[in-house]
Length: 90
Image (cartoon, rainbow, N blue to C red; front, side):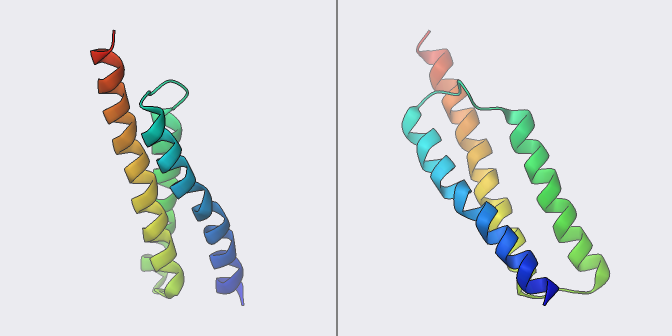
């Protein structure tokens, strides 16, 4: 039962990442984005993945952690793309 609640929590957080990725991609600017925040979120997902692996509890929840990490990583890549666009537009 706890895995279901953990998955619901991850899915709720996870729905915000595609929205953020699209919004940041369309904005074409790094203004308002925080690489520190993105890296902090990534560290949290990596810790969650590590906890699942080390506990031997590699259930479907692990896949949700990985999916969220991929989406947040995409946001980090977009940050660097937008930073480059900002520098080119100055």
